[in-house]
Image (cartoon, rainbow, N blue to C red; front, side, top):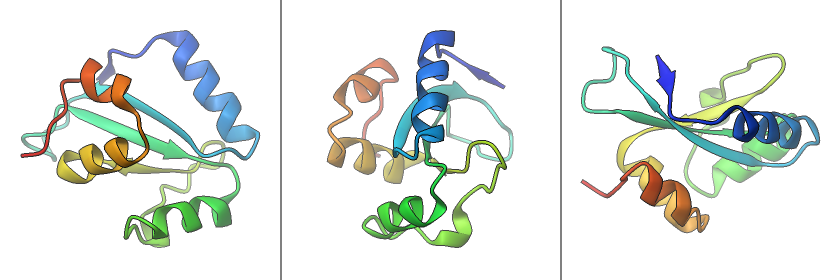
Amino acid sequence: MAFGVKREELRKWKQSVNRGEVAIITHFWLDERFPGCDSVTKVGCADIEKLSRWGAQYGLKPEWIHNDPRFPHYDLFGDRQYEILRNEGEWGQIERFILKQK
């Protein structure tokens, strides 16, 4: 279940992904398969090769890309989510979703 993201934010993320930009969006998310995680960050880009190169700098493997036909993306959780958002300067998302290193 996803919540805590505004429709306009999602629209902008989708547009950026479709333009071949690396786009980052975080939202609250609950899934019993991932206990202790209450948010997810999606890093998307329609250019899979570009997304793969972006992920490589953080040790993300290309096979971890969710190959959604419209919005390919990585899903980030926990410490990795926090570290990548911090390195990308996404302080607004860190503060909004009360993210911290565990």
